[in-house]
Image (cartoon, rainbow, N blue to C red; front, top):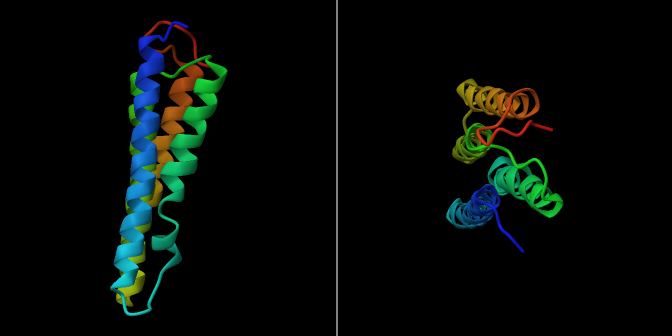
Length: 134
């Protein structure tokens, strides 16, 4: 079976997203072990963004082996998922500390904008390889 360079690139992104999800779960466990019984759902579930936002879609795309997104789309999408993940961790830290801050909404806005841009780029523009989006 021939494995294209696009396929290999997507596999690397898949492995990276699984590692990111595992790191977030480990980080949350360690952080909450030292938080004296205080916990935050934002911290506990920070691993969900890379797991469901990257690992699941990349696995489906690799399984179907069709319409692999270009590198620009992957970078934009990954940036959005990273913003959502970091925002969740920071919101968790702030909640565990016992305070509030509205500036964490910037991470949510940036993540949504980047992810929407990645989807739009994949749907409406040609990828670097010359194939159409979905």
